[in-house]
Image (cartoon, rainbow, N blue to C red):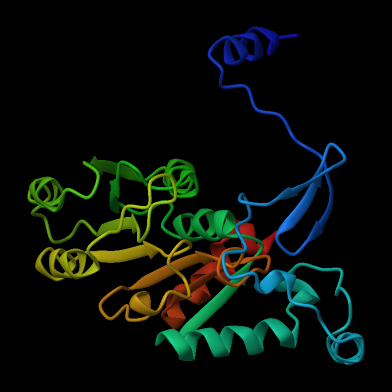
Length: 255
C-alpha cells in the first residue's frame, strides 16, 4: 500500500508508535503484558479519576441526568449537567461563559474554526500544542510563528502589522507539555494591550494549579479536563459572544 514506505521510514528512525494494551487500572497501578506496573504515564495528575465513588450516589446521578442523551449538544444532547459544570467553571475562573466539548483537542479546533474567513493574523509560540497548530491550519488563517517564550521576538513580529484594522490573536500554552516551560502571562497581557490583540491561552497543563487561577487580561482560555480534573472532555472559557459563535460555527461542537 501507499503507506508502507512511510511506516518503514518511521521504524528506521526509531519514531514508530504502537498501542499497548492495558489490562486494568487500580489507582497508581496498571497491568501491562500480565505484569503489575506503577503508572508514571497517567494524565490524572491529582488522582481524582481514581477516587472510589458511592454506588447510591452514582445511581442518583444517573436517575437525574441519564446515561446518554444520544445526540449532539446542538440538537437534544445538551444535558443540564453540562450547563451546571459550565456555570461553575465560568464563575470560578471569572469568565462570562464556558463551553464543554469532547476534548481539549476539539476545543482548540472549534475555537479557531469561528475565526475562519476573517482577516485575523495568529501569532503562535513555536512550541505550542499540536491541537493549536492543527486548529490554525484548518482555519486557513495567516499565522506568524515566534521563538519559544521569546517576548522580544513576538513584539518584533507584532510591530510588522501596524494596521489596526487587521485583528491579531496571540496564542500560547501556559505550561508546555513537552518540557514543562512556563509562559509569563503578564508579559503576554501587556503585549495584548499594546497591540490591541486578542489573547488566548491553552491552560491544559496548568488548570487547577493555585498559582494559575488568575487570568485577568486573558480573553479566552481553552483546556482539557483530563489532567488535574481526571475526567474526560475539554472547555473553552470566554465571553458570551464567543460562545454564541462556537454554537453556530464551531464544527467540533456542532457535530
